[in-house]
Image (cartoon, rainbow over all chains, first blue to last red; front, top):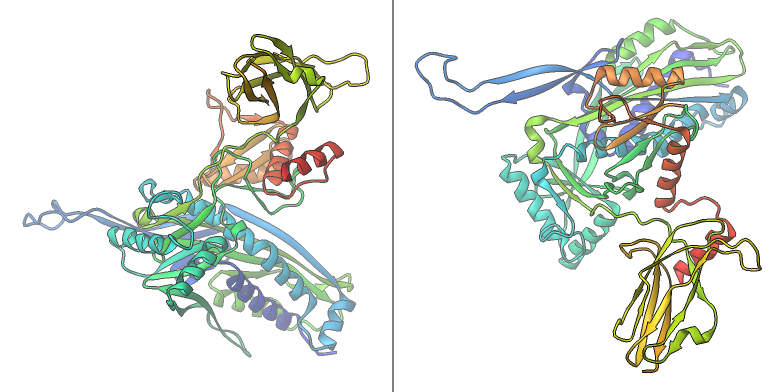
Length: 466
Length: 84
């Protein structure tokens, strides 16, 4: 078996953690560690935020009547502090070394990042960004000029460019687009034989080489560019305007992760959100602690060397308490991720959001049926007949509402209260609206669960013989 | 069980203040105040939710996402009717 030290394994994990996250998270484009001051020993990050007023007249004395600008390093505490524990038994991990394969614990953490953590980070931060776009730059996709079909999306892209330019920004704009909208964009581009160039943005994730034998780490982020818009497709389920974050602690939340809040009337899909690269930051930090390896491997100056590694990682990744697993039966690690992001105040009107309409959530339809004799379904002008409407849910009460599609042919009681049977073969709650026939012809009688007639239960055609 | 709801516009979280672990996360979140707002009653006190209300909220979100739980026979017959 290869003679890996704790130190070498830790650095290998470090590289994979940084690479894995940058490759799989879309908002990581805003996580530029060189623009943040991270304290590797604490949770606080210093984010430089610039605020400025406009220019003023010069009155002969500096500082008198002149607009002001401030550059503050404000303290930022990432609001999302999430954790994950991984363990792999030593036999499986040793086997991966024997086969020359990627270490299994590495694979476990990578899978977690790719399938759980990166999607969660994208979902939470994009929802947060969407709530920070200036109100005047939020467009519903049904609005003229901001559609997302293949016939309208190129106009939308042009209008987004215009909106950003009118806000005074001419640099590159990270334009996150849902997979559905991107499919429309692809069709539109192909139909017009337009090629959008691919660009590469580089991020230095480490300061010089990480450690002896491990070179500097630079991440390449690829995006398709249309003028100054960097088109970044994002899976639909990460482009949500409202999301629940499950804490993994309380009952009902043990699964952890995030859950789109599509049950809310305020929920909306994010179709496209355009954020200039200078307009926002994402603060994403990993802490890998209690990384223990089996006792049959050597540990060489681990603590001292890992401190040096941490200093070179800008604090984006912090390794703590790495050493020998006294149980000697496996590799274990706690992965903790602190993350968050904001759009800077002065740039919020340079961002654009195209979203789906908020939705009216109907109650899940509960059905019923009109039952009874055929004679109730027809009658002469002026005759009345009782329909019987049975509601599918047993042992419930309430009011059922009725409408007639052609009141000139037949009218019906506006509402009836359900009666719950106490005996008989049909124990469904029921009511008996009265139909009054009029001029000859058909009319459809509809039963509704609500007074506003949006939740249909059943319908039946009645015939007036005139 | 006394759950409080915290929102920041886009992300919504529930914390059980009777669970020390959950309460600790809530306290730190509120203390650091990075734009999070506790949902409050009219008098300004935090609005409390029961565990059942919170679970039902998540169940509705799962249903609305199309990731439904196993149906009863009645629900299944309604689903068939819907597809028809």
